[in-house]
Structures are given as structure tokens and as C-alpha cells.
Length: 172
Image 1 (spheres, rainbow, N blue to C red):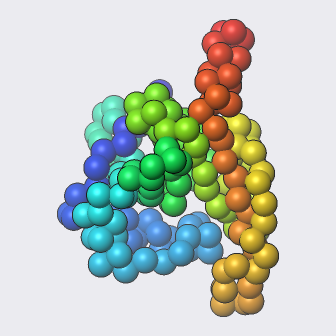
Image 2: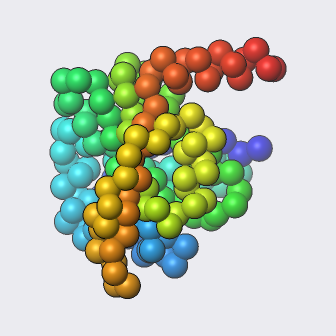
């Protein structure tokens, strides 16, 4: 199985980032940013912007991740964005596990949170299966071309992540 890595996004990666964001598999679920917004995120000391690369034979970009809250004094980090191409190959799950390990094992955060559109059933299933807990709903919080959409709030705490990690090891 090819491995995947999170590498800091470079300005030269932004053509891929914008194309992945605008891809028909992602556009309905991802707020469309301009190149300048991504450049600002890359430059911000409060944000981590990563390219997801598949390594093995030939390295290839398969997505990107944005984390916000690096300077949060409460050790709470927000998974602002996770965008994957191609779908259905397990890259989302593998990336989410890398993000959790980064947040809790390497960066020592207490909490990792995210929001997801109520219509994005695939993402909700992934997040819940990876230990994220529902916290609430922001009703009609996002305007779309066809009306308004609810955002669901989910999070996982470091203790829950560590318990999950222990349970997985005890099954092996």
C-alpha cells in the first residue's frame, strides 16, 4: 500500500489546491477560496496548510488539509478543510488519522474540531467512525445556490483519541 504524507503547501501547489477544491466531487461541500485566501492561510502563523501526497512509485498530490488555531491558548485546533481526490480509495480516512496523530501526538492539542455540511453523509460517516462526537448544529448557517444548509459541529478530545488508539492496539 502506498503511504501518504502531509507536507507544507508551497505557493506552487496552489493550482492543484484550487482545482481540487473546484472539482465536481468537492465543490458542493467546500467553500470556494481565492488564490489569495490560500496564500494568506499559508502565510498565517495561526494556520497550517498541507498538501497530501501519496508516495511510492511516483509522488502525487491527492488533496490538501487546512488546520486553524495553532495559536489557540486553549489547545483547541480546528480542521478547517480536508479535500481529497480521488474518492473511495481510503485516502480520507488515512489523512484524517494523520491529522489526529499530528494534532494530539506531535502538537499536543487537547481538542480537534470540525464542521461538516448536513448533506455530506459520506464525510459525517468517516468522522464519526474515527471517533468524532456530535456537538451541535448551526441551522441554515451556510448559503448555497439552492438555499441554506445546516453545519454540524463535531470534535474529538485527546483522551478519546488516546483511548481509541489503545482499543485499536488491543484488537491487533
